[in-house]
Image 1 (cartoon, helix red, strand yellow):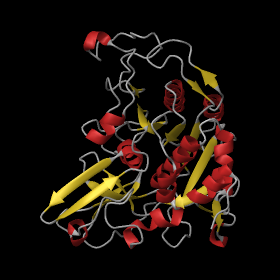
Image 2 (cartoon, helix red, strand yellow):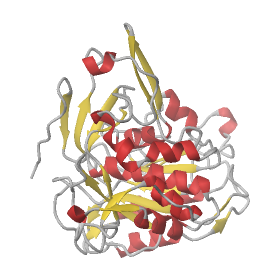
Image 3 (tube, helix red, strand yellow):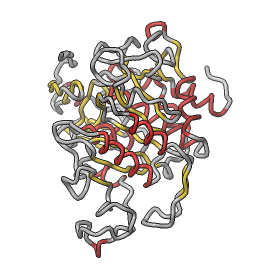
Image 4 (tube, helix red, strand yellow):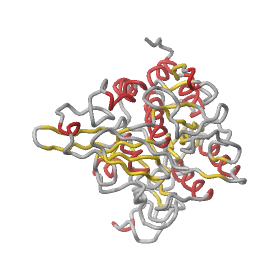
Length: 383
């Protein structure tokens, strides 16, 4: 079943069955030529305007302004990889300097003996590329741009500007999905392990599947949530971590998830499954849900980001919602880096705004409020 969504006027819509709807913003449109200062997380209008509803409703920009530094934070996208020709993403990639390769990445040697060959700039679990280059789906590129992306298009007297919520954080791209959006349990497990081994504190897992043997994936998710210390190998030697928080979309099937839907079926203290809401705060009609298996909801309709071409676009999917939650989780962890992932998850759930429309749909019974989650962490009051 395919669901058709309407994009704003002057947008061009592209329907992708895996990710929902992509709306590309032409630079000749009225929205594109409106002059304004660069806004965090929103290229089409200033916060307060309809195009940026999710910045206001989640209060994520307020949280970004409160967190002093994210320079030590590492975010991982376990998905389709990223597009390295986007300067803001490529410059954010945490290079594994142990993988010297005599100045070449593609020497076919595991130079740092960390178990991964030629992983200087992330890792392609599928083995199609030496680096995790994004496929045509651009899932990893779009999600990562919400964190560390930045661009500015000049046109006539106006400009379209965009900045991610976590500029300055490190990015670890991992490719586990083919160009057709397919993956396997083993690829997902390998991707999670690699991201955790590189010190990722938030792992955005965009791959999902139905299986009767998904328990192994759950075991891996729990595994990467445990505290660890680097073993002295590779360019990341000496790193320590309280464990990784795994954030994943519930899926775009518009139904209740069941015991064969992974990773939603996993019971793990460090796993956050995200549903998508519309601008009204109601559950988006394409979003799957689950009163016990889906933890929190976040805006997932017309979320702004960057495509592989560098063009500003908006996407509609639960993937967009989970990317936004990943950004908020990263900010919370940057503020309290010593906290275990289970505590970050708890703050995300308790930091939701109560919404009767989401009763019986998500554990939190509401939509995520970044500032409320932040205040819970610091024992402050919230307006």
